[in-house]
Structures are given as structure tokens and as C-alpha cells.
Image (cartoon, rainbow, N blue to C red):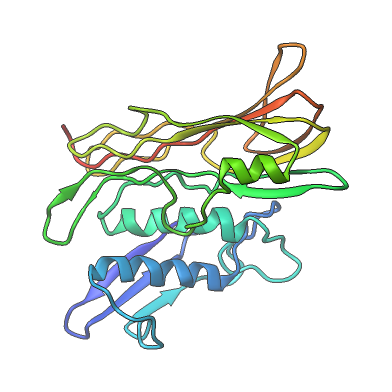
Length: 266
């Protein structure tokens, strides 16, 4: 994803140009055009730094250029299932990076699904928020253990999860000190371990498993995430960023979320 933002102060307009973005991909990370437009609206509303109502005029002074045939403007029959939950996060990171405002967030929703013929469940696993600076130049640190940007869903309470599904939430904790380090540190990520009491199919749809979210203005990068499966024989399988597997009763999935970047040199 490539974006250039220019502001015409005379006309009180901005142009957000995604020219140079990759063409339609053969995977499912293509994002329908409205997803990219929603990310632009969100980012500019954040930059206003005030409570404003959602209205038809919010995008009127913003010209959005998205090339036809790019992964942000695909046409049928391109696959787009990951566009809303993954690519939207990367678009948002690119926008804030272009504006020099906020370091990279985790860039994924860590979409974990599991189930069998009787049970089905889907959750997104939080990391933390990145560090950045206000329009005044005042910097701020990130917050640990929260969803950011294009996702604000909450996880099911452990008691409800274990009551309704044949699983045990062995562990869910904030990984202290895991966020990027800089003049303003990023928030810390999380680690979540779910043990299955019945045989289940399990899948992960995620990003940032092979490279960390980047810091900004000299701030340190965060950490890459991982998804592992602890087998009953004691072995541990490492899943790819987008992967699926079958877990027998007693086996567990362990998701370590990517951590966001810091802002500013120490």
C-alpha cells in the first residue's frame, strides 16, 4: 500500500493518492474501495482532535485517488475477505505514517476462528496502541491491551466463553515491556492461550508475523506476532500468518500479538 497526502491550504482541500499501490492480489487481502475510503475518513476525523458528528460533508474537502485494478479497488471476482479486517489496518497505518502523526499499530485484528459441527466461535485479539503526537507537537505514549483503529470489538468474558464453549482460557495477559521503545513508548501487546476440550478446526487470519510494526520519527519498532499450537505429545507447531489446523482435545492454540511502534528518538 502506497499513499501520498497533499494539502492545499488556499482551497482548504486535501488529496489522498494511493497511486503506486500493488495491483489486485491473488490472495484475499484485496479491499473493496469503500474500505479504503472509510480508513481515510477515520484517519482525518482523528486528526481533527475534536468531537464532530458523522456527516456527508466530512469527506467533501478530501479528494481520494485509488487506481482502478489496484488491491484497494478490485473488481469481481477478486477475493476480498481479509480486506476489511486486515488491509484496512495497513491502510490506516500508512495514512498516519504519511501524516507523521502515529506510529504503526499492530496492523492486524488477529482473527481467530474455531469450531466443529456443534460449536463455532470467532474472536479478534487485541494488542496495544502506538505512540504518536498531537497537532500541537505534544507527544503521547501508547496504551496496553486495547484494540485500535479499524476494530473496536471486545472479547467474550472468560466465564461466558468457558460456559458456552468446550474450551479453557488458560492464559490471557499483557506482555509487559513488549511495545516499541522511544521518546514515547508504545503500548504492550498480549498473549492468549486457549485449550480445547473437544476436537476442533482452528484458523488464524493475521499479519505481521514476519516483520514488526514500525516506529515513527526515530521511535523503535514493535515486535512481530506468532500463532502456535501446543500438541498433546509436547511438540509445538508454528502456524503461518494465515493458516488452519485441527486440534484434538487437550491441545491449545497460543496467539502472541504483534506490538505497535514507538514515537521519537530517546
